[in-house]
Image (tube, rainbow, N blue to C red; front, side, top):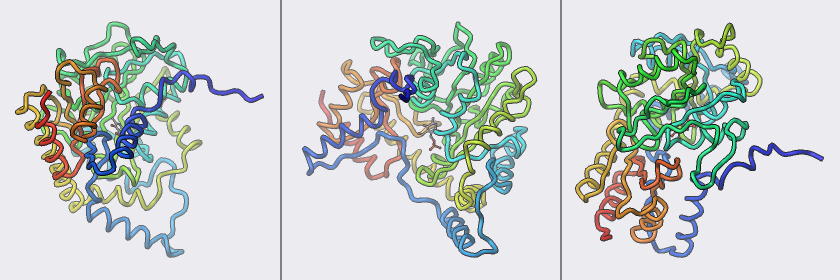
Length: 406
Ligand SMILES: Cc1ncc(COP(=O)(O)O)c(C=O)c1O
């Protein structure tokens, strides 16, 4: 008789966004006349920029001719894209990353959940609390997190690093030393960012303790403040301790196109073994490369026209972010985020729980956000709104929330 991976049975409830989806569908089925505004899931709404559409068309045409047809892509990515990434995302920022340290993939969700595979099951992970749920759940599936406590909503073998108003939503160095440290800045869900000096402390800590930092920089394009690093490799010593994850979803609207990459510098080693080689082996065995068409679209992100158009797209979302931030602040809410990230993190009013506020907004003003508690226990009493909606919907949602009388 076959056996299950019993670790899957330990996962509590369904994935956060499925729960939200079900609640919204039920409400919408019962009230078909209501216009629901969705500022919950972090999905983009603006169309792909013209430079990207042109690149996609060109690549599709190439696929229609024997002379320019492309079959399997190289599993680590085409050189044209790896070179463009190394040049624009790293060299231009003074970071020493070579094209062959870049592993092209179909997105940061897969990479952030798969990366744990190259580490032993006896590694202890540390995560921010609240956190993007994928880091924890992928470790649960692997059997690395111990037992779940339903009361505290925590795992026995995970080190939680609370991110609260008291620490500016930036974690403090943990007392117990972790082996793997997941950091995401600018942060989902809180919208917080850390300065280069703060990130340097983490790099120094990891190098001192022999830990690896898995640094998710999916929201790098939204950074507006000069002292906030765009890459962990801006810090001294990061080549020895850090893996960086990037996505084309948020900077270029590729959520439905699918493209991302992981950087593993060759100096990052466990004894004599380079993690670079392990991840290359993993990629070669389990992944057949991101599509040629999509990688050409990715290359267009770095063209002069692409950069210009995407700067405008990011500015469009950040204009929404400041509309939400300022509107809710004026209305008396305690808000943060929205300056270096497309997320606004607000305290729920009148001591409501995160889910109570979710239900209240859905039922009273037909606005969907994300309950903070879905991201971890320290998210209780908070609520996340995204700036990824259209400007018109964002304005209407904020106006509706401003009108509530609790
Ligand atoms: C922190 C973080 N990492 C990764 C992802 C997923 O990115 P991708 O679309 O490249 O899979 C998200 C998506 O919301 C995210 O918030």
